[in-house]
Every structure is written in structure tokens, then in C-alpha cells.
Image 1 (cartoon, rainbow, N blue to C red):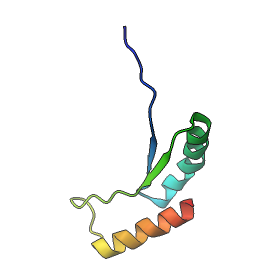
Image 2 (cartoon, one colour; image 1 turned 60 degrees about the horizontal axis):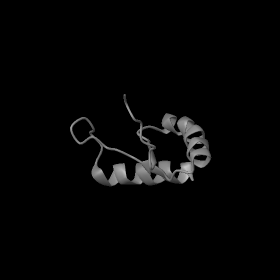
Image 3 (tube, rainbow, N blue to C red; image 1 turned 180 degrees about the vertical axis):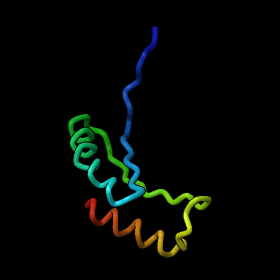
Amino acid sequence: MTHLTRPNSLSVVLNHPDDLARLPWAAAFARRSRLPLTLMHVVDPLTSREHPDNAEILAQDMLSLAA
């Protein structure tokens, strides 16, 4: 018999501006479940040619759009 544990947080990964479409669903789910919501922007240094400073600016822009 498997026992499921209740999650204690919800994380949303924003890699691309199109990912913002998932945010309203995630926010509603977190609110209804009374879970804290964490927004993350992940840059893969192996596949990204983006300069780290530009990646940080993009992350800030995406998080400000999400707010």
C-alpha cells in the first residue's frame, strides 16, 4: 500500500516567455491548496549561449511579468 504525502510547496520553472501561460493555473492551484509558490528561471550553461548577465536580466524580466 502506497501512502502519498501532501506536498509542502509548489515550484514553477519559467524558461521561456511562453511558460508564463502556466502561471495562472499554478497560482490558482497553490492558493487553493494553501501552498507557497516558488517561481524559478533556469539557465542551462551547457546548452545556452546566453551571457550570464543577459540571462539574469531575462530572468528578472520574466519574473516581473509574472508578478
